[in-house]
Image: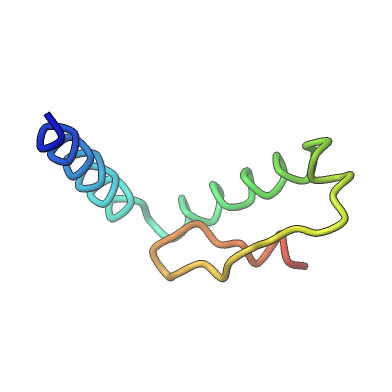
Amino acid sequence: MAEDGQTGKAAIRHAMKVRKAALTAAEKNVAGIAVATRLEQCPEFISARHVLLYHALPDELQTRLILE
């Protein structure tokens, strides 16, 4: 049973990798802006004293806008 869970998890990771690879730089940029805008409107983000972020890898949505 655990093997089925791992197989399913691997399949999801593979599918997401393929979907990410299909996005153009412009599409990633638009999505990154949308995520940053939505996050900045969350009450939890607004009231947070500390926020942990990561520096995105080239194939990920950029977090730079949130850092600025």
